[in-house]
Length: 420
Image (cartoon, rainbow, N blue to C red; front, side, top):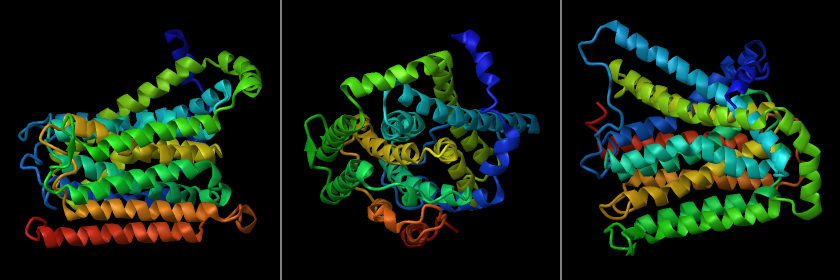
C-alpha cells in the first residue's frame, strides 16, 4: 500500500495549483467566507465566559500554548510554519477525499447523497467531535460543546450558500429538489427541536434517564440511527441493479488504487484538522489575538477549513448531491455529538442550565434549514438552472448575519464589562 503514495502525490488533479488557487481562494470567495465567521466570533466570546457560560471551569484551555511568554521569535515562527503545513494538508486532503468519495460510491453502487451523508460528513466532523468531548471532559464546559454543535450547523448552511456565490456557480437550490433530502431535513429539525425543548424544560437538571444521560440525548441517537437506515434503504440499489453498477465500475476503481488514496486522504483531513486547530489556538495565544475580534475571526476560519475544502471540491466537480448531503450529514452528525458529550459529562445533563444565547443559535439553525427546504420545494420548471444568487440565498445570508448580530448585542447585555 505504501509504495502507491508517491503515485498519489503525482496526481495532477490534486496539486494543480495554477488552475485551482485562483478559483478557490479568490478575493470574492475570501470575502464571502469571512462573513460566516461572525458566528464563531460570538461562540469564542461565549466559551471564554463573556456570555455567561455556566461552568466555573469554562476558561480551562483545551490546548496549552507551547511557547513560553518570554520565548524568542523562533518558537513563534515554527508555530506559523506548522499552521501553514497543517492548512495545506487539510486543503489537499479535502480535494482528494471528495474525489475518492465519489469514486467509492461509483464502485459500490452508492448514491452521491449517501456517500456525502455518511462518509464525508463523518470524516469532516471528527475534529468537532473531539472538540466537544474535550470541552466537557477537559474544560468542563458543556456550554462550549453545545455552542460548537449548534453554531456549526447554522454556519454550515451559510457555507453552502456562499460557496456557490464565491465560485460563480448555480445556486444549489436551483439545481436540486427536496425529494432526496426530505428525510435528512426532517432529522435535523426534529433533533434540534428536541434539544431546545428539553433544554427549556430541564433547567433544574432533574429530567434524566438511567445512566445520568438526558432523554433528549437518547432520542437524538435513535433518530440518527433510524434516519440513517431509512436513507440507506431509499438510496442504496439492491439486487441486479446493484450488481450491474458494481461490475461496471469495479475495474476502473480497482485500477486507480482507490483504497490507498482513500486512506491517505482520510489521514490528511483528520490529522491536518487536529493539527490546524491546535496551531490556530496557539497563534491566537502568542499574538494575544485570543481576546479580540481578529482572533475570533482567525480561529473561525481555521476550524471551518475542513468542511470548506470538501464542499469547494464537490461543487467544483458539479457533485451537488454529494455537497448538500455532506452539509446536511455534517449537521446531523454534529447533533449526534450531543449524545456522546452527554455520555462523557458526569455532572448531570449537558442540557441543564443553558443560557439565552443557546436558544438564539439553535433557533437560527432551524430557520435557515426551513428556508433551505422551502427553496428546494419549488418545482424545477420554475427554477433558473444558471442563477447564482437566489432569493433564498440572500435571505439565508441576511438572517444569519442578523441573528449573529443579535447574539453579539446580547453579549453586551449579559456581560457588558467583559467586552470592554
